[in-house]
Structure formats: C-alpha cells, structure tokens
Image (cartoon, rainbow, N blue to C red; front, side):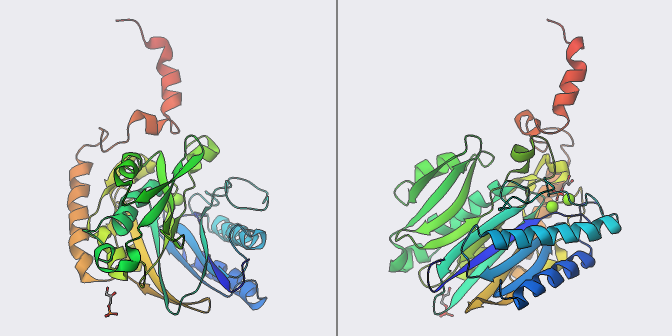
Length: 366
Ligand code: 13P
Ligand code: 13P
Ligand code: MG
Ligand code: MG
C-alpha cells in the first residue's frame, strides 16, 4: 500500500434471508460484528461497520492494506461463512446464497460477494457516503452516478466550484465482453450516455476527477454471468467521496429524489422503481420489493468510521417514496407482461431455457 493512504472496502453478500428474501435476522449482524471485532483487535482493520440492506449483509471496513488484499478478502469470506452457519442453524432462506464456491482462492471477486474498494489519502475532512441497494443490480447506479458527476442541473458544484471544472472520468465496464473503457465528461457526455443508458450491459465501475483523484467506486459483480444461472440478484453498493473538490453531500443524494426504474424486484425478473429509504425501512416485502436503496454517511478520522448517519432518514425524501409507491402500483398492474417483467434476453438465466426445451417438440411451421 502507498504510504499515508487508507483503504475503504465494502464487501457484501446475501447469506440467508429473514423471512424469505425480505430482511436479515439480527443474529447474522451480531456474528459478523464479532468476527470483524476480532480482526480489529489484531490490527488487520482500523475500523469497521456491519449493516444490512434487505437480505444483504454489508461489511464496511477501513485498513491500510490496499484494494484486492488477500487478508481482507479472506476475512470477508470467513465472515460470510460463519454467518452462513448461523443462517443454516436458523434455516434462514437461501443460506449461503451468494457464496458460489466452497473454497476461498485469494480474492472474493468472481466467487459471489459484491466488492467496492478504494484507496486514497484522507483529506482534512473526508465525508463519504456508502449506498447499498437490495432487489436490483449494479446498472442501477448508472443514472445517479451520471447525474452526480456530469449533470450541472443536479450538481451545482460542477458550475460553481472551479476545482470541478476539470470534469470527471467514468470507467465503464462491458460485462458481456469483459472489457472496459474510460470516458471523460463533459467532453464525451453523449458518448457516455449512449453506453450507460444500457444498464444491463454497461456499468459504471468507478469515477475519477479530471486530475485522477478517485471519487466513486461501485460493485459490478453479475452473479448470473458467474454462475451461468439465476442465483439471486447482484444487489449492489457504491462508495462516493464528498465535498471540497467533489460534489457536496446534498448533491450526491439529490438524484435519489427520482425513483428511476431498475431491474430486480420479484425473482430478479422485473422492472421497478428504486425507493430511497431510512435503514429501518430497508425490508422489501411487497412483491419482494420494490427495490430499496439506503445511504450511510461517514466522516473518516484517521481511518475511523465516524457514523453512520442515516442519510435518507429525512422527510424531504417522502415524496420520492410516495412516487415510488405510485410507480410500483402502475408497474404491478402489468402482471407478467413486459415492460414490468424483464425482456426475454434478461430471463435467459431463469427457467426460460427449461420451458423452451419442454415446448420445443410442439412448435410447428405456420
Ligand atoms: P457550508 O457553508 O455549510 O459548509 O456548506 C457548503 C456546501 O458545500 C453546501 O453544499
Ligand atoms: P435477493 O437477490 O435479494 O436474494 O432476492 C432474490 C429474489 O428472488 C427476490 O424475489
Ligand atoms: Mg436473498
Ligand atoms: Mg438481496
């Protein structure tokens, strides 16, 4: 790791739902807390915070070992494993759902858990926000990340703060072709939008300020592409740095006043609105949704996580929640019809191939 830098790692997995896929049993949080406390005492971690969004267990950790560190990934993996034991004992739903392998091989990437990590020099004051979502997938961050870092109608700082006039660079993954590209804004805004508007294939992995300073990192793991079948959605997280040369806290939260349509919801197979909620309301129950997002705000102090503040616990997001419920009603009326239900190309990892096979002999030329 580079001298004087700290690393913020957010690693998450669904290790068992309570009840169904709607929420998390408190014993899983206790177990994860206990496991990470031990590592903090041993000095591997500077600090940590364990939380959950819906049925997803979120490990927020600070340390000095850099991104993709084997010890940190192993700690996360072992934490998910011991929590899975508790989930099995309580017969929670889908115990160990996101752990796609029995053996840890040095890095949790590609093994099921979602990962977002960044290493940086802590500033005089370092406000960060960790967004965590349930019942959706990583493409859900494309729209808010664009608005935060490239839309002056959202982020006044892009106009008012001269340190942001150098713009932001977006690292975009093509998850089908396993390749990536860097696109700069504002110069290449139209090119960027052409790609990231296709949220299933192109995902913003990270955002850098024009001078190369890291601003945001998202988890982009797509479980179905790893497992080759439907194994739950890839409920994503994103870390965003704020203030003083980055968008202000309020500018980072602002895009979530619009509950945009994302994929996920029931069986990971439907479009629905992304509803911003306080921590205690992150229990997607109606039709296993609608999709939720929570925002945990922290001030870092020498790597210590001062927080979290529950950033969506604010009546100014009530209207977004109300609108999300209206949209949810509207979308639900479509039942099994598109565009509520995902298109066929998105259902290729569900039971669709089996059904195709079963009916194959009965198709005849018309
Ligand atoms: P303060 O003057 O309260 O620090 O606010 C500045 C700012 O960035 C508001 O978004
Ligand atoms: P999760 O991905 O949150 O486990 O949800 C899966 C599901 O099928 C919900 O209906
Ligand atoms: Mg689940
Ligand atoms: Mg989930």
